[in-house]
Length: 591
Figure 1 (tube, rainbow, N blue to C red):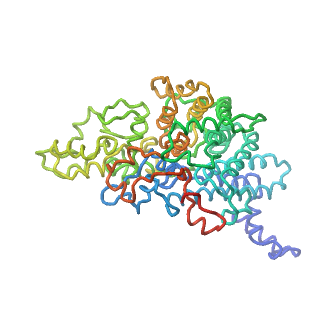
Figure 2: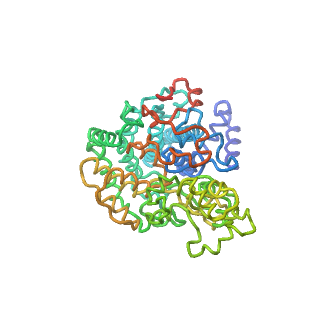
Figure 3: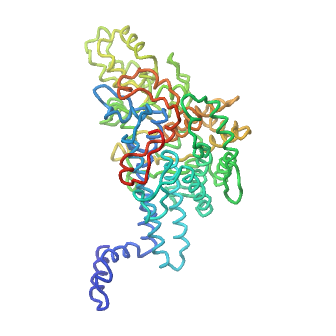
């Protein structure tokens, strides 16, 4: 490459009719980078796809993390010794006390806009050079694909921040463009998908042998349209008081159901209401060959890039060409937990909340009649199994034993706000004769921990894996279609029970919105949709059991749960840094 560049430069210098003043060095280098269709692809679409990295999932401030902590599904509790307090960033997001300086909110904004900017730059580059090719059809399709990718990020923007700038070209920047209303952003996104979807290819995104591996295909477009339609009643609500803490879930359900029937969306030449659009998109993905994998765990395994028919949009990962790190497991497990599974240096953070455990069938009596997906989603209890308790009993400190600090070696995952009240747990430990600090047990080691994507010992780094990140799955679409049918006055139990059947859960009858909400928790935990779901079901502003009781030391050290009397928290605050950069951007109401 360097030889060609230098040869080009020397040739230009020798031409009497040319000079570097007429042909700037930057232009020469740019033309060389785009001199063939292959290089043009690599430096536009390829760069965008390979640069997605951990913006969706895998790092502390990933979009999935923001969604699931704010939604109340997961929590970074303040552990003993100041672990995971960080000025209250994690606890404030969970307790809904965020302001415009919260790190999660700022990093979510910056990460999303960074990708929109990169996509717009790639589109502009293709537009600039496509006339150099005799048949620009492929290049035009690349532009549609990039617009589909941009639509994914605009879904996050309209869902999380609402009133944001609409930047459709490289000439527009978020630091200069006047923001649009949430309704206008929704309409832009809806119309963009309507135009783009017919031009997307029908290939599978998760096929390691395909040139479309990790790229936006037609099914991805339909999936995003289904999400837009499913949540359209929320996006088109200007008076957010309906979502306030004191508003009943029944009233919100009636309102959402009726509004979804009123909203019309045109797709593939036919206008449908919002609920019908969700159902249509699920049916189109089924026609494209998507179905449920035989096993729930298949979607997150080391071999999920081989023959998977459920994962619609993925971030490719391996230990060679797609080195995308995943900090979630490291962040969740305590150091001793990590050693047990073969890892080192784990951070002891993220855990499931009690509300999440209850959705899976946990109760205060410690019964283990969990939904089958619990075992594939969380570490909890004795990792070696009940039969092997004796082998790890040395990790506990009972009366008469010589090692009062032996508890520090324990590898028991359970309890800690997935079990009884803190005071009750303390009493039980005392009855067992435990002589150390109860905080050692319940602050340091307690909590049901992340398990969905497991440690891959075949990789050179414990943060790497051969398991692709499954960002959008067909199971999500089936649950969405079932919900849409119920909201539209139809019976959606077949779609919901398909998902339950695959998980070896019993078929459900008398299904209501609360059951569907919990089913989405069970199926989609750790997949970054919880906040959006809780808003739509009317439960987002309600004080959950985890937020109400001070059972977790340090969880409320930065403020109690913030009741929302006007529903403004269904949108996050606009980061102060964004408003400083662009004075046209105004703060969302209520902040």
